Image (cartoon, rainbow, N blue to C red; front, top):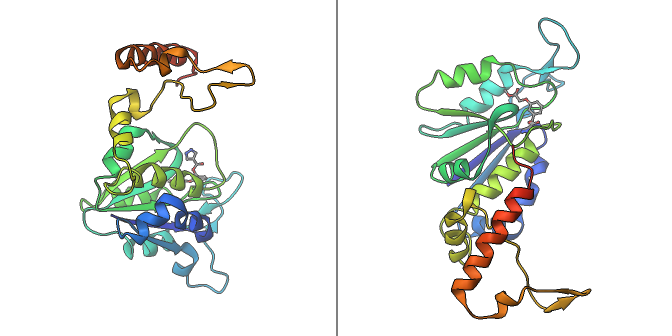
Amino acid sequence: MKISAISIFPEYFQPLQLSLIGKAQEKSLVEFNVKDLRDFTHDTHRTVDDTPYGGGAGMVMKPEPWGEALDQTLTDGCDLIVLTPAGKRFNQRLAEKFSQSPHLVFACGRYEGIDARVTEYYRSQPRYRVHEISIGDYVLNGGEVAALAIIESVVRLIPGVIGNPESLVEESHAQDGVVEYPTYTKPAEWRGLKVPDVLSSGNHGAIATWRAEAAQLRSQHAERD
Ligand code: JET
């Protein structure tokens, strides 16, 4: 899979060289291509923003640098992902869908957002799929951190990236693709707190029942939506 990102802070993507994702790149399972939006400006100040039509606070990202950057980055059949708090909420189902794509392109906006004609224009091009995506109901200074979260969740689903694919199988059987029961390791007692006896019983049926009940209790306590 190819993953491109366009940002005025390409250094944000440095952590992709670390750990499992760095290894995936070394194994050529994924190829990253990060571009600086300012490289697609033509004025001496490398301007990427301007004042909003209609007035109001803050600055809006100009469409021309985005158009040039995207024209030089998008490929036929790719998925363009625009990070925005107004987008569709990202979840494991979308991570699985994006993991099937040949090429993901992340557009990381800043300030008060990107001129709305940019997504409008690329949506009108049938060779691309455009997704406006939010990672949650809060405001970030830019899309970079949201893109990193999505990239991590997608890349770990690419076959060969995770050493033990059993853990992916276990997750996909669980609700929303997440192991929701509490987990324990040694020691059997820590600060007066004991590991539930059933987990050392060797009775796999009883363990499965206990985990299902514990997951149920946990989901009642977790705040959802
Ligand atoms: C975000 C994503 O804050 C989030 O996304 C980054 C961001 C910040 C500021 C402006 C912006 O503009 C995007 C745009 O797209 C058309 O205009 C994006 C919060 N949850 N998920």
